[in-house]
Figure 1 (tube, rainbow, N blue to C red):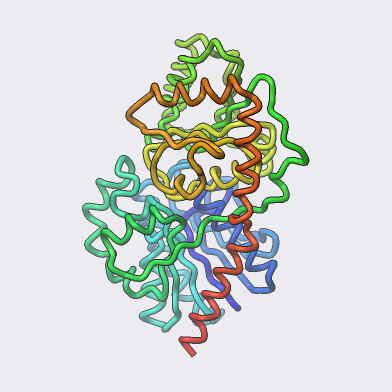
Figure 2: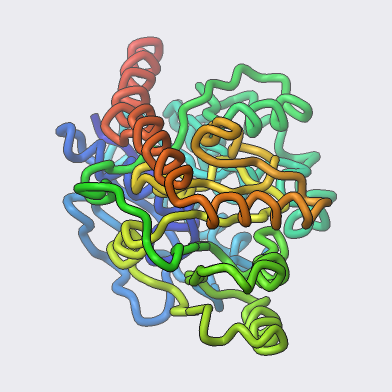
Length: 378
């Protein structure tokens, strides 16, 4: 098959959704298919490159931050990617288009389907659904939403990465939606043997933005500073200075490490060196770092929201906790950190649960769907 993928985020640009798109593209190539990707260019990158057999075409869109796209940069990407696809599709003749994020790339798939009859599927994460990440997208969804229903209805299939994402999308779009989770390569993440660290190693990975609520991590851990733990917070964003200030105010500079953005390989290694993933997010679809944490055999202490319900079995491999109650987070962490034998059991259960998220299994689900789409078209 010839697969044209359109996504405004693809590593090193963006977060977990872009990495999930990359893993799928690499998986399609590994399975013997031909993949081209239209994505965003950022200063210092090549415009054309190959990523393990995936042909990457990077499009300038005036994006100013690696970890965050402005409405303007997404609009520019939409216009320019549509123009490039308009010329590429009749020449290259892809069998289908795979659109990551209904916004901003969804209209490109719709246009190619109307002009050339090429089927497209959309994979939605969360931020491309009204109400998914209200602190980021509610303002511009007021203008965008009226134009989106035809894009969803014309798609050959819509894929949601979690049951929560599917339920949220069905509140706005009455179309069939299938769930296929984000997947990871288990082998690079899985430790040879699980042993708990001393002190307990806590990790957070993501954008330092309101949605992820990184300042709250410092506030929670400050209440158990008498226990033996260290914390690494991987990533960057607009709230980094607030996180740094909170760490200094709490006198915890020696307990925290903020290495900034790391390569995917470096993130995997940090997860392998950790015991516990701590994520008090306000909204999530199916966070890739959560799947990676499972594969690394980490205990998960996360918000009782979104796609985390697909990752955590309450009290078995971790805990989902209400955002409104800091005390429940403090008590859960106190219990986990003070009982290393119990922490070890949580970690072992996560390792076992990770098997359903292997990238090879996820890729095969997509390929079966693609084959069915092409058969229906023919």
